[in-house]
Each structure stands twice: as C-alpha cells, then as structure tokens.
Image 1 (tube, one colour):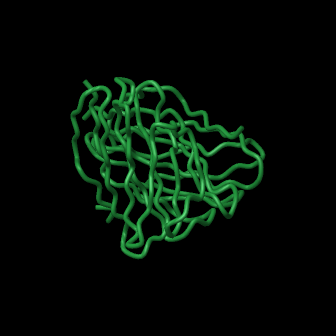
Image 2: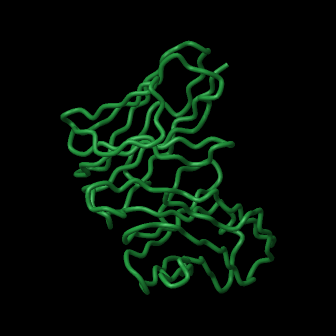
Image 3: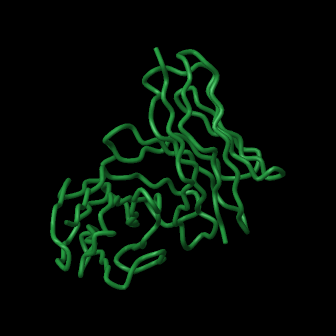
Length: 114
Length: 114
C-alpha cells in the first residue's frame, strides 16, 4: 500500500459525459501528479501540482483539467468524453517537487467510455 | 526530447534463471532513473532508483546501474521467482529541480515459469 488513494476504482460512462477522478496523496506529500495508461499510448504524464499550484504540464487535452485543493487532495476532470479516453488513470504523490523525489502511485481509476 | 527505450516483451523465463531487461535513455541535463513494477491488477510500485551517474539502485534482488557513458539503466536479477511475474517500466525523471514529471518506457512483460 503506497498511501495514495484514488476513487472511484472503476467508472463506466458514455461519450460526451463528464467525470471527476479524485486523489488523496500520502500524508505530508505536497506534489500530486496525474498519469494516463492506455494500450496505444502507454503511460503518459498529464499534469503536476505542487502545494496547490500547477507545476508542470504534459500531454493533457484541453477537455481535461485538474486542481489541487488546500487539503492537498486533487481532482482530475474529464469532459466531453470520447471512446479513446478509456484508460487507467493514475495519481502519484511525492514529498516535494525535487529531481530526486520518489513518486508513489495510487491503485488507479479505470475509466471505460461506451 | 527526452525518451526511454526498453526491450520489447514479453519475456518468458524459467524460475531461477538470470534476468536482464535492457533500458536506454535520451536526456539533456542530469535525470534520475527509475524502475517501476506493475503486478497484475495493481498500480505502479517503485522498484529501485538511481539519481546520478554510477549509482546502483537495488531492491528485492533486482539491481540497475546508472551508466552515463552508455546512457543505460539495465535491470538485472540473478535468480527470478514466479512472484516476479509482472510488467516492468524503465523511467526517467527529475531532470530539473522544479519539475519532476516521469517519462516511462513502454513496459516489458515478464512471465516466470515454475
């Protein structure tokens, strides 16, 4: 158990819908990262937040957005969903945002878009 | 841009065999290097890491040495067990102090026969 929790574990929805994925980092960790794992794209970094502020952005679509709240939990919002958005979404956390910090991953949320 | 290339799977070995999974990287600066493991139905777990050239990361009998001259971080284990069956990801990250997104390789699926 990494100490990172993600809810829900599974999500099934239809095209065009909007969903919110939630992540609680390990106690004391200030950085939260979101990754997408799909069969065709592999594991891709989406976005990082550090202590409530956006720190780095990866291959995140404009239809997707995220935020980190004062209690440090984070939410990833996915809107106008398409079939290709079906994937496993991982959240990770680290103590800070330094180059040697270890990222601890949550169990993931499996999103299925029908 | 930065990238990670790891050997294609799947890799199938007999129990107690020697394991090598090759990983090479392309990066500017001084990245940290990681191996993550994903067991069936689970999230990613950090297996080992190295933060500078010539560092050796080790954990659970696995080892990898950060070789700057060959830009490699090959994963090795002297005697694999059935419980090592999983997908292994080589990853690069922490290149800059202010942004520590991780770039993952495509993953290598390892199956160990009893």
